[in-house]
Length: 206
Image (cartoon, rainbow, N blue to C red; front, top):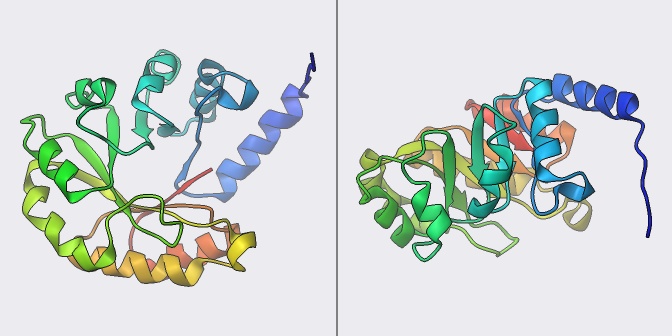
């Protein structure tokens, strides 16, 4: 067994510095909470005063909501066969990631007017709505609360920077509907440049 001991004061001081330097920061706690546990990280996020926390799956929401009073984003895309995700549609604190137009239609037809993030397909090619089909989401937006467009980008080290891709896709999305742009895996410098160039509210998942 390996035991890791963390200098709590230094760790929390570092967290505060990162939050202060990153407007719109959204901390991520998923899986096993990176060894700390989801409830512990939720409590740390609460102490930092951030308004939003991201978790990996709908089933993880139950582990953080008691320790965190703000909004909770579910990063795994919503699917109609995920009973936990479906059950959360009426919860005003939950923001659902939606990566397919068919799922957006289902969510919009739920009668709950849920809060959604529309996942944009990037060169990661994991999941998301392709730029050439962005117009297909428009008919469904009246029945949801659009929390933003979200881009899960390749790691910067693997691509020698991904700001150009982020800006191109974000502008295409914003041309369909103005909404906050949520980003992951962008450097601090690129995030600052995107915040200045997109003329939209930005959030960064860390």
